[in-house]
Amino acid sequence: MLGLAKLEELLDERPGSARPKWAWGIREAILLLGGIVFLAGLAGVIWLWTTWPKSIDMLELPPFEAMGIWDEFQQGISAEPSLPERRYLAAKRWHFQWLVAAGAVAIIGALVIGSAFLVKPRPPGETSSTD
Image (cartoon, rainbow, N blue to C red; front, top):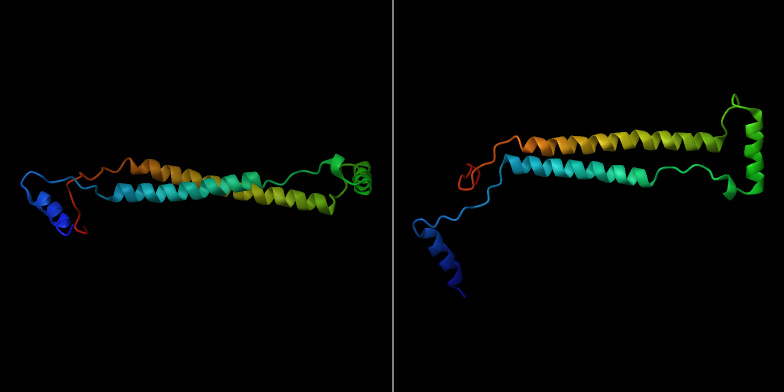
């Protein structure tokens, strides 16, 4: 068992037996960065989409609250929105703003991934000065 590590060294020392090593280069780093940014944006979009504020279902309201909403409807369009309605509209606005931001992050990540394919990959046998 102790000699197994030496066998691998002997294989590497034979002439013409250079094993190609996988090289980590700038292309792989750009792909990783783009993938992380894209997944973060996508996770944000999914979370915001699933937690989108729901409008009030009139059939689920207690009769007293339904009568209050009916009174608001009778006042007409020019009436100020009620506090629950203002909260609902503010929540929708907040969700929409962050949904757009998360979508933009996901698009930027996808563009970074796409730009990685414009970078010339390093040949497998070539090593950089940092290797």
